[in-house]
Image 1: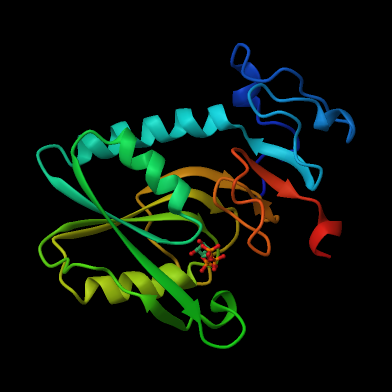
Image 2: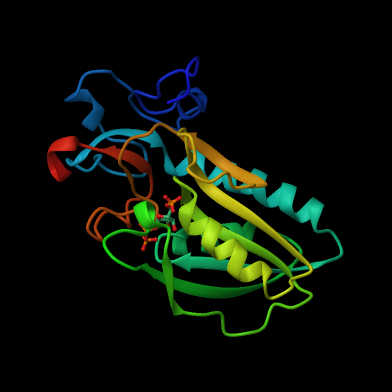
Length: 219
Ligand code: PRP
């Protein structure tokens, strides 16, 4: 986490301030499992919620309005990287009121981890050419930046008219490679976050909120 930023150690304050958005917010571990309106009980593997379903919905509407204004009169090709960004692309697409098309890529790392090596292999490429199109890459989380560095270089070589990135989450860490990300939903502390598309061992993607996974789950 960057110095000077306040730790996000409870259901986020923006959610807290919304009338009726959260039934109960508390600092004790047990009480953090109190029901969150519309969510039922918080998953027992989740230590705390960072962004509720309503936080996410509101932020996406705002991002969508910003993107719609920036691309007024244009068309956008939204490109999501499987699998984590699937939920986000579905919602951000509906928050944009200019014409959008969707396409998907799947990537895999060579060796043990794309995050440490930065070497990425394309498992599924785009279905259509992107030359002279406005490409907006949709990511769920920007961490080291290695995945996006590879993807942006690869996509730029296909000569799109424009190439930008929207990420729901950006980790508050020093990126190994600086990525110019025009649209950022939320900054998150350098912890293991799951939900709303983000997984641990392919689980938790279906949680409607973003939360921090308890260390004992992956430790
Ligand atoms: C996540 C995320 C990004 C990448 C970001 O994907 O969706 O693509 O990691 O990390 P980086 O900035 O350190 O490169 P992941 O490999 O977990 O696959 P998934 O989308 O299938 O969960």
